[in-house]
Amino acid sequence: MTRSFYSAALLFVFDLAVAAGAVFFAKYIERWLPGVSLPDELLWLKGSIYASVGVVCFYFQDLYNWKYWRRTSELTSSILLGGGLALIVLALIYYIIPTVGLERNVLLGALFITLAASFAIRAVYLKFRFIDRRGTRVVVLGDGDNAKFLFREIRAGGYPVTLEGYIGRNNWDLASRCLGDVSDMHRVIKEIEPDLLVVAPDGWRGTLPIDDLLHIKLTSCDVIDAPSFYERVTGRILVEEIRPSSIIFTRGFLSSPVQDALKRGFDIFFALLGIVTTLPIMALTALAIRLDSPGPIFYLQQRVGKDGRDFNLIKFRSMRQDAEKKGPQWASQNDPRVTRVGRVIRKLRIDELPQFINVLKNDMSFVGPRPERRYFVDQLEKVIPYYALRLHAKPGITGWAQINYPYGDTIEDAKEKLKYELFYMKHRSLWLDLVIIFQTVKVAIKARGSQ
View 1 (cartoon, rainbow, N blue to C red):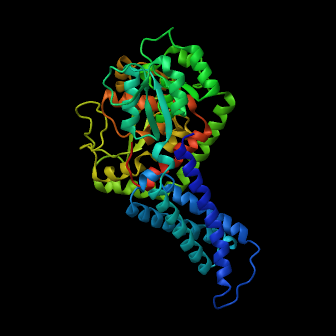
View 2 (view 1 turned 90 degrees about the horizontal axis):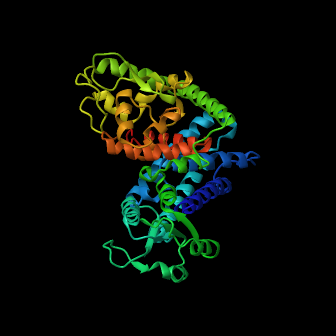
View 3 (view 1 turned 120 degrees about the horizontal axis):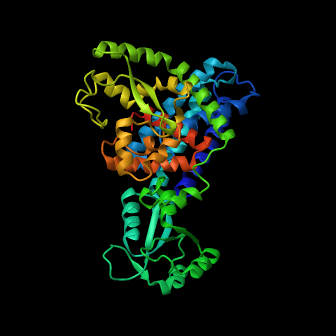
């Protein structure tokens, strides 16, 4: 796990402890205010509920990812929005279960302490951000196209990785430090003391210094190949480097009957919960679509499901009726065919809500690769290696690609999304599904747009 993960975990623990402590401190202070303050035997429970709601609301405001609050103004707005969201959620909980409610003075006092402390620790973190400044320290073994590709991708992506340099020849044009030749590998590793040695050679098959790499792995640092490093850092699989053996012999891409049964139960539960909780929103959306433009409220479109089976996808109509008079087209970020209401419901992902019905019908899962149309699947299978692999997973309402990659309307975009989809298929689990669902809800709440 990267240093950024540990820093986020530390912030999470800090917020949890401060929020719980703030309740007890505010309760103690209340004793000095006018009126009678009776002992509260449920204060520990009330404090736990308050703290839990607080950190969840902070999560939805991206307060555990410093990239979203690099400036003080961004931090201030996120803290205030997180506090406001927490008040709304707590008010709802207190209305449903009055016995776990905090007194008004205690609640407001605890909230003030929590927000002030959370702002202060993050302001200090921004000023002295030692943890994420360097990230995982990496030395690359190789000086060819593979190494250059890694350097370009890591630098362009802004990942928490520090590329210390490469081991290879001196006569290449990559703007990075040559640390020495292969014969100097032990000296380089001893001097640099990296966290990882990434093996990314070109044309060295059968000539890699296996004994040296084994010794380094056992005595100095972890050793990893370039595709695995790329996958670990970026959260996507390097499609260009996939080999049949890497799929056949990997522990990923498989699921047991027990896992499938649990995922199906998971899907049914969340689909029913989604229908019940979003029914008022869907009703208002249906009315808005009817008033905004002529045509049906719902839009049925044939998509390719698991193992290549076709099914009818259900969505709220977000485009004009004549959107495809020129034939099938990819949707784009600012698609001119989208209606006024369509732009809003797409940005908030409300147009996807009717797909809860597809989940209940077992056409789709809650999380999985997005289902594509047969017209595009037939095209993409011809030009993108291993594109058909994504059809071995049940398609989903949301997915790893949707929360990590924007709208795309080219073959290159489809290839990039496939990298994320194959990563999901290799590492799929109920835990990863929950992470994706939380991220999807966060995208909708913060209105960052559909992907």
